[in-house]
Amino acid sequence: MSSKKTIDKEVTFEDAGVLNRPIISKTDLKGIITYVNTPFCKLAGYSKDELIGKPHNIIRHPDMPKAAFKELWETIEKNEKWRGFVKNLRKDGKYYWVEAFIEPVFDENGNKVGYISARRPVSKEDRKRYEEIYKEMKRKESE
Ligand SMILES: Cc1cc2nc3c(=O)[nH]c(=O)nc-3n(C[C@H](O)[C@H](O)[C@H](O)COP(=O)(O)O)c2cc1C
Image (cartoon, rainbow, N blue to C red; front, side, top):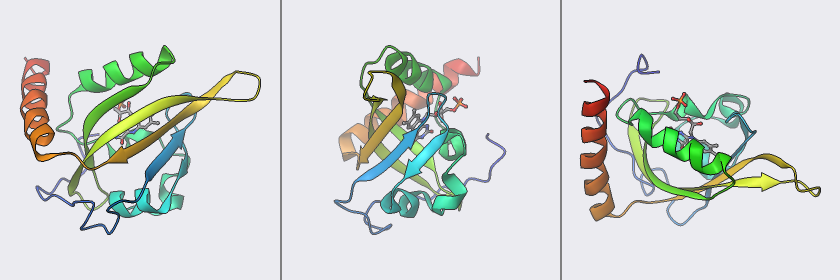
């Protein structure tokens, strides 16, 4: 929640040494993390052990509006793919922006078992656009 400390400093993919690396996490149907790869951990500043078994909102940044995640969950619960822009909170309180792609995972019987997500760096234009969009959404949410 927003009680976690935040530091108004960005960490880029380059800073974290994960430029051109896949940034992958998987969750169960409720958003509990079941898998993270090493580049994900480097970018978020957590170890694998600290992330596996935790809700994915462990990296939720307080600047992100609730409505953005509501739309995310409505989309993936309908078995559709979601693409969006997310400002995430690192363990050290700094932030990083990602363009995220999330989709459902099915087992061999066609049962949905969870979700997988991949991320890439955000372009300067999208970053600027979404900072404004989310600021406005947050403002509306606090009215
Ligand atoms: C596969 C997957 C990846 C997710 N990745 C992120 C993420 O990088 N950052 C984030 O804040 N929420 C992510 N979420 C959404 C969280 O589950 C959660 O909805 C969000 O952090 C908001 O927290 P809240 O639902 O407790 O309000 C992801 C969800 C799924 C299913």
